[in-house]
Image 1 (cartoon, rainbow, N blue to C red):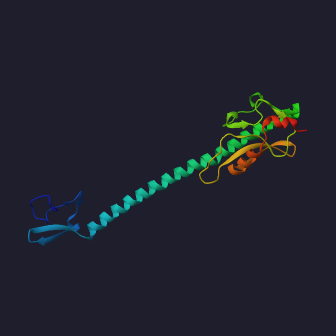
Image 2 (image 1 turned 180 degrees about the vertical axis):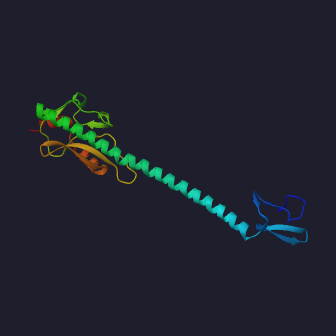
Image 3 (image 1 turned 90 degrees about the vertical axis):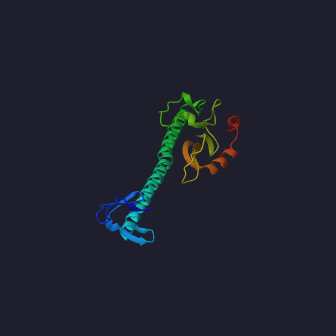
Length: 198
């Protein structure tokens, strides 16, 4: 029930209580009923409530926008800078393998013995196809030498991997989609079979 806070003339009251809100006299209209005088809100009071409701919705909208912005930023960080870090490290490994191949005429048995500058990703992030056995200095065109053990999975694009591959007589780096990688790996020979390649 809406009522005057003091038992005095309504014209003498400074405020009336409407729910939780203190309303001024010009925002309250006195409606006479059979039970007596009963104050009701005028259009001024309605505008105040509407304004507060709009402010609430605006605050919720801002919070949702900030939340979605943070989600986008996190996924951007995962997909772009981390992807670039992976490709830089892959290039260092490929360069070290190529230097070893040129110097010794074959591929190294273990990547850990090579002089590879550390980066965000360690060599454990990669699978070396010729681990333990090494490989001949010359390989068939398109032979996979190494690759990311797990695909990078950005939210806004397809999964991909960095691969180290023998192309045009040299060890090079390529970035391929997960589907293309699976096609390549399914055609790859076991490491020992490459030693028979002339």
